[in-house]
Image (tube, rainbow, N blue to C red; front, side, top):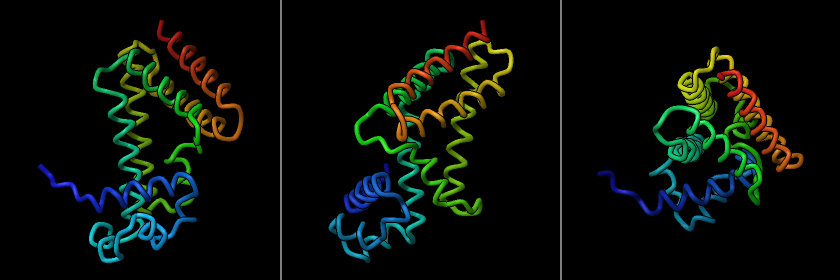
Length: 182
């Protein structure tokens, strides 16, 4: 069993809150160190660079999405996953998708941050495709791509427009995609 460093966890919690609320590039390492109440040496012992911290932040977000999705495959998981996304866009303090936000700040495809974003999106697309396959959709790959675009739009609209409309539209989109499977 891996021993959890309290300082590492505090750094990650602090950075995650700041990155999400203010943007990754807007928050410097010095601010994370100060607000986490740790030393610079402790920071660099756990995260050799800011990119490593950002990737760890995105990993935590990815793991939360993965854990919320669960293991069973099919329409029920798809509805739960999309429903959770709809709830997220309506939650107080919602500032969009952590992955879309990070991609906007790290456009270089060779960046470790951009690669973490790409890996999450590939995983989510595969989850959608697996669930749509299990639900009997005639073209699960195309439907998964459609659902990913609906999800992305809901994430942006939930922040920039009426979050309730974003949630409702995402749910209607899922219903239409699932209707194609019947």
